[in-house]
Amino acid sequence: MPRVKRGPKRIAYRQKTLKAASGYFLTKSKLNRSAQEAVEKALKYAYVGRRQKKRDYRALWIVRIGAACRQAGVSYSKFIAGLKKAGIDLNRKVLAQIAVSDETGFRMLVEKAKAALAG
Image (cartoon, rainbow, N blue to C red; front, side):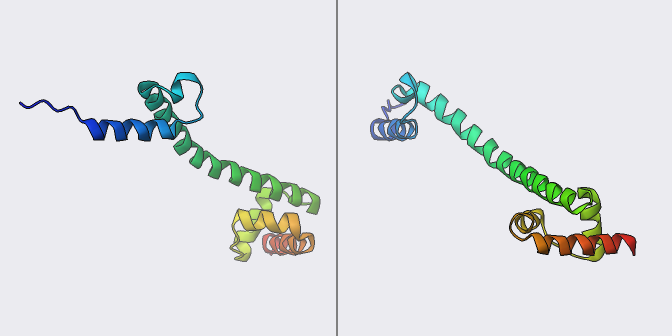
């Protein structure tokens, strides 16, 4: 079997790894093996973080809606149940924006939700 030294491919692979690891601490930005491990771990954290970001934003929206609901005199769960009964199909992101920026509009939504629960 012929001997293969992989010159250009190996150099390109190392350069790609070290470029991705630039700014890392000590040998993680200088040595290929350390840099490769650090980059792989960073990519795993980035993948997980993109999913956690969605969870975190949804939790933030629920907290904002819940706070606005308490000011309007209704619980979060009753508000959401009332909106579903009333046929108002707004997601939590939009509801949170309305709660923060348009207090009168949010009060109208709360009244509609209360009416749907009562009737």
